[in-house]
Length: 101
Image 1: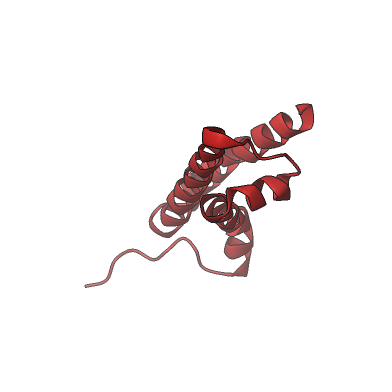
Image 2: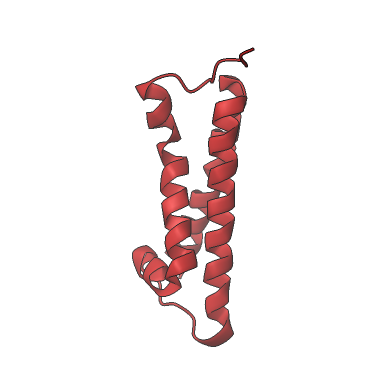
């Protein structure tokens, strides 16, 4: 007995999923080395307990990227496209926050 075919079929699908993979690695960096993650974004890391906020952001990014990747393997292309389109709001918000700093 076999399940339904994965909607991720070829190179174009993987290219479309590249932002989710990038979000995973950026989030992973923030979890393991929050100061390095902050430097990547060009912001000064907070000192003291505020540094844990960067770890929380990293966990958010890792979890959301895994959600998108899992969805890519079990849902329709339209669902994946909708989630990826909405996901763009996360980095746009991050860029907007950093740009006003």
